[in-house]
Length: 451
Image (cartoon, rainbow, N blue to C red):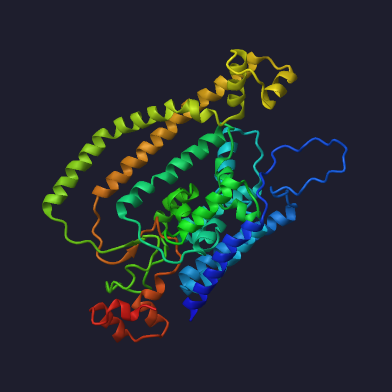
């Protein structure tokens, strides 16, 4: 009955998320106010949320603390998927539609990066709390923030209808994308080029009931994909998920599939739509172990070469990446006009020439920014190279797995696997310990137990 209600609730939310944006006007948030020409024209409301009063910001912090605490309590103490789902719906309504996706813990990465390299920037207290607090909870309790608090995760989780398992090789390849996104987001924020996480947020148009047409299409495509590939943004793009993944692996009180021992009944084997359940390993032949050791030795030898090579590739991308900065883009336009390769001036170049600022000064600023991108490209490229090597090393370092368990980094603490465990059913008084033992001896087929 509970599963049926949750399923009907998902279908309703799924229909709402897809139908409602079709009735909303697609607009682009304004960056600068338009001039006032003293006419009777009435400007429409902006899509960008207006600043809130200090008291309301503290309310947001209070709601965040309460939501994180409840999510951790529901996952660890109650082990209730139903309560996690209900809290997820609340978070989607409050942090998503009511607060219009801002403040966002994911986007806060950029504010923190910017203040590190630009000390004059005054970062709001709310942003600091929204960035740090989910990480702290993750360090102790796992990714309960992803389970029921993050609105971006909630809007995707609401549309998971018939998830399919992504092949492990493809999963490993796509798993590199969040690290690339994180590196680029930090690079763009640190150089002042912009906050690309917010700029390319696929769901902000739903939260604010309007966005650029391309972003609306991207968001709807992401949700459509999410019906068969659970939480694609969270798993293969979210830069904040990288940090949560790292800290979750260190958590001492991470949720487990079973409240007691595991009898390897296989009932939970396909319950996780995120591929976060680790299966018991078969005995590895001695020859395979020897081959893995040799491969590990080669990887450690070539590691410095990979780091230097990937860093060099990243530094070579400084030119196209730096064009995302307004100053560099303007300098290139001015250079084209001065060389005669462009005959018509743009609004940006007209405004610059009217300001009377020397072009030499503009070019010097652009060169300095490009230099920063080149240095940052070395760092980001080296970081990606290190990630690739560590992932390969992890494939060859086989740790013996004797029972079904969660992958702490990937597990979102959503609670889906709880109901599939026989000992969870014993804890709830649904079956007897003897019946649970029979399931462990394979006398009861898995499909007979699944509801």
